[in-house]
Image (tube, rainbow, N blue to C red; front, side):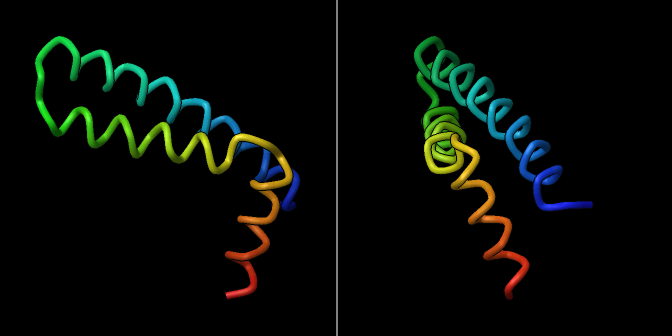
Length: 66
């Protein structure tokens, strides 16, 4: 699979992480469980660091060089 195709697939996963993160923050607000806050923050953090295509490609190339 090419790097560009992997980047597109990773982009879909990153947006899914954002949706799950927002849902976990909502669940934290409703139930006040620290686990939902932690998981939501991690999911939103993944979206923040991999939200644009150039960062995703750099991440994928870094994984290939290891």
